[in-house]
Length: 419
Image 1 (tube, rainbow, N blue to C red):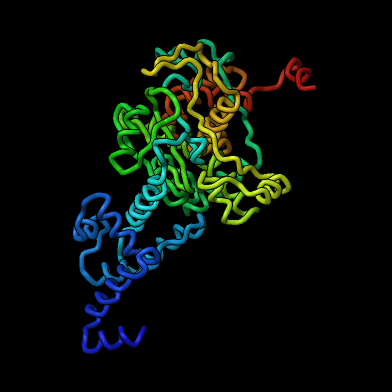
Image 2 (image 1 turned 180 degrees about the vertical axis):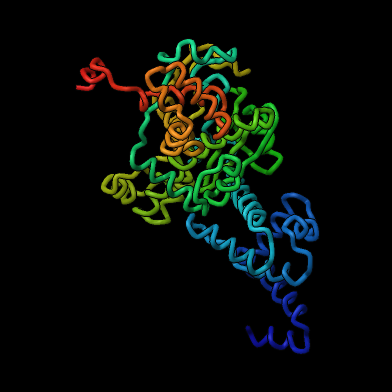
């Protein structure tokens, strides 16, 4: 403590001293203390300190001042949630509501630098969406329709590659969760990842742009307007995930998982690799703030990382400005977009309903014994996936058909096909 502060503190009570220290932190280094988070959250939402304290579960002045003087949680994923827990233990605040404050403030501050004059590619942003016209497995129109053509139903890869499996493990570890629980996916997402989840009715690109503008973020998507189930916009290391609040709870849960995969695999992982190998300054290149130097370009080649910026995954062939699809089902403008969406679908299923956990559950229920009757197996598995793991109807159908291959007894024809 400086001599000046010592002189000012002479004769003051401990509470008055905390007040003095908080004011000094707010004036000189708000970026290093929680007071900066509190002040910005109050500004963003036009709330009083008393309202924010009530939201956090803080009832008296002393813990509020102690919170204001806490350091900000550290950015690395595996230290963020433990830091928040330590702050909560020190102040008595609700830890997950502290997470909400930090994620809200930091995500909006990061995304605010997006410019209306630039496209996603030019600014280093990534945009992705889950369309209403691209649901897995086709349109199911009646209760018995899914099982009429069970063997012909679209499937996804049964096994994940090592990198994708590690990404899922890292996600749960950073969230401090021992087992996945779909009901708490949003909570765990905010604990684990630098993101914010926003629910809007009748979600469309234009409605997202309106929400962004109301939060001082000027941005236009580089494609025609259309209706969506969910959307991700990521920039400067943070992601905003938008979800249609009119969808069912299961649809919302699956949409969140889908967009989280885009955030992890298509944005955070390549960004993290580039920064780890080329140094923190390359973030300016990734965010479109400056072009890469010749040295950075050469080093990127040798280190086998991309610094070309991100691309948007929103383009769909033949969509109108009102979102009506003019293309046949499954036709995509860009094969890379199709590949990214397929990966997001498969890993989203793994986030909500891990393959090994589901297979053990099916064995426990005796459903695995239906392996030779694919239609019955898919029907029973489809029901379990919806009820126990909160999957929506169509992704549950595709996943059930995918799992059927693991429980189908091999025939001579299957064996010859595998040779």
